[in-house]
Image 1: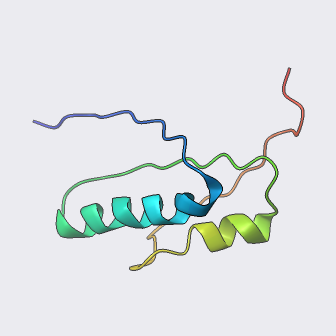
Image 2: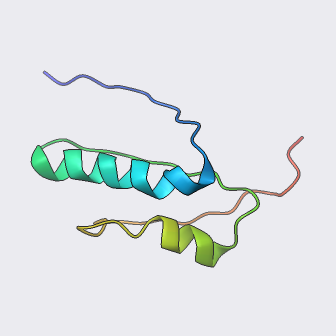
Length: 72
């Protein structure tokens, strides 16, 4: 049996990468877990998002998609 946990984390910009690393560390320590992480950084450049996602060990899959700057 598996449990799904849905989390929305609101963290200060300077803590976002540390939170993602914390999640990656948990993932690495517990093989068989599966995480899907969506990051919404509307004012960041694509380069900033790429830097944010640089965790160790690296992610096995990354998909980038943009959303319109103005949402209805």
